[in-house]
Length: 420
Ligand SMILES: Cc1cc2nc3c(=O)[nH]c(=O)nc-3n(C[C@H](O)[C@H](O)[C@H](O)COP(=O)(O)OP(=O)(O)OC[C@H]3O[C@@H](n4cnc5c(N)ncnc54)[C@H](O)[C@@H]3O)c2cc1C
Image (cartoon, rainbow, N blue to C red; front, side, top):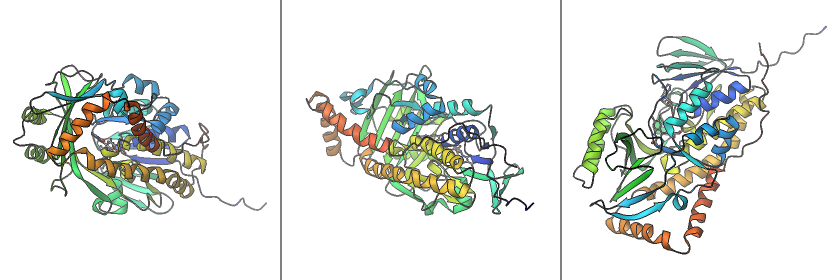
């Protein structure tokens, strides 16, 4: 009897670098489809901290399909709205949540750290997590990927996924230096927890100054007595500062807001004690391809759309859904799976990136006159008879971006079987 022709062994073992949003979401789906994912995270545990992130349209649908939507809803920020104040702390305009949240009824908002923790908790029993380690080198020989970790451990995987954020280590190792792919959008953002100095409950207070925007908020899940302090400031070119040098970043933040009034000196001083301090350039990542051989990028690592898009987390979730689904649909053939993933994701990513580039220009305003005009709008809009029309128009644009990735029904819950 003639021997049966040998077909390429379908991929099963997948190393995922990064345990924030994209990584654990991908691990959840890969496990359901019969793959064997391992997640490596540089931090010693799932990182807390970060801004409140919007989950809209496709992201909500993916949370539902993952079975985590109820838990996400239980951790909703549940904000009532926000107001702008002037230098004396006087309210100059209010933003009711239902008008300016840009959300449809099913949409929600959650703290990034809560979402990461929910996804980790949901997957930890079925997925191997390795904390406090990182990929030091990888070698793709066409049949698999040999990985050496910082710890010295050596392992071989069928596939490697870089879900390690805007400053992706996987991207650096496989595609080269970040500066080839990163586009600074002209501003920096910092956020950290401090004492609830403004005594806020489910409310956000904004203060705009030329080239700066400060917001302080306390969500429904905020620990008693604390609030989040968020600072955005314009910086036309990138500042000289290493991505992980927190002490230098705190100094840059203090320098950027030195001499400013309102509550700023006290809020900035709180950075000194913050253990969840986040500081980064508002930037996008542009790549012609997201995969090379057996390595593929996901979420911010592949296509960061920046905080200005309000869709980075949503795209990380939908990307994880699509990547796992397309790999499963291709029977574990990574060439076909990666190509299909990119084809499905790219138009939505491009739309969101354009959105981010437009919005990044409006996050801070360059003069007192422009700020006064915005305050006038904030004051008058809620009173105009057209407020619902205007809110609808804003929502339509945002919803288009939030639903830009088509979510096919993949062969759900059908394991690939046991490949040798
Ligand atoms: C602590 C933190 C705070 C954030 N705050 C905000 C915010 O305020 N506003 C906002 O819009 N976006 C913020 N983001 C980014 C936001 O989470 C992402 O835009 C979005 O959720 C996409 O998620 P992601 O999983 O692709 O990437 P990220 O959420 O950036 O996650 C990347 C993960 O990879 C890990 N990692 C990095 N390097 C390595 C390595 N060498 N080996 C292994 N793991 C590695 C990181 O620790 C992190 O857990 C924050 C991210 C983090 C990690």
